[in-house]
Length: 134
Image (cartoon, rainbow, N blue to C red; front, side, top):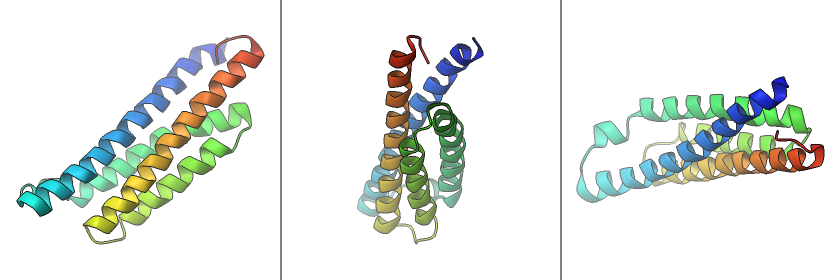
């Protein structure tokens, strides 16, 4: 019973993770265009605090949603993919702002998003096997 109540929360966290990953990728691409192409918003768009906060938020959401799914379904792939993505995102904080940082971040958010998608698929597959929503 408790598992059925918790599952919608985990699905929402997976969806939030996918949305935030996409928003992060858009932010990276927009930052490059606006700052390098037009010379606008360098202080705001390239602030290291935005990237640190994004990594913290991504880590929390992925840790809860995907970690929860890995424990429940005993499938490591979503967790491994997402943690690899978080590693790329962390690596992006160690390089100077610019194309290298954007590439590392976009690879990272794509992998985190894929981890959330895999987590949702495994959740659905488990629900089909068990005969109830997970």
